[in-house]
Length: 188
Image 1 (cartoon, rainbow, N blue to C red):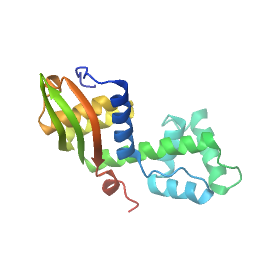
Image 2 (image 1 turned 120 degrees about the vertical axis):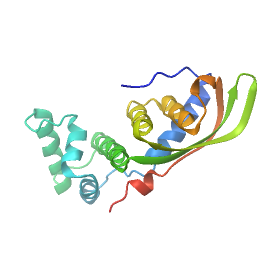
Image 3 (image 1 turned 180 degrees about the vertical axis):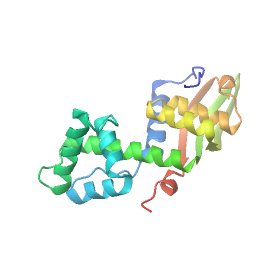
Image 4 (image 1 turned 180 degrees about the horizontal axis):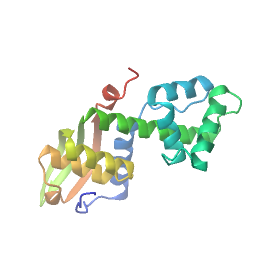
């Protein structure tokens, strides 16, 4: 069940910058497998079944989608078939899902968003909103990311920081986004 948030006044350029900052902060550094070794590393990091489930879009091991994803993974892991653009995208999506699962398993994540925010007539320039997300805040944040709703993810951060998203009228000049996801999503 997702939270209801107000619409923030934001031009398309700011919305694009927000999407890029949050996406880059959360999913930057995820490699796109180019070789069978990369595929094996991805499988080792997130688990074979998790990668297959992310590619297949189902947990039903008896389904045709699961079997097709399993066989495709096996062929690419063994190097019998090349890794084309479509499969790199599938592997990237599987790594993103694995990274979000790692955050859910950790049960916490520290994030910060730096931007100019306006409440009524007052602009607060360069406000750094930092929050430690846990419980329902973490779940809402990750659900928003999974749905590609980066603006809602930013609203969860603002709310956890202590600013009610309802009082923010406008947001501009997205200056930065940081998350400790690299510390959470490790090979160990």
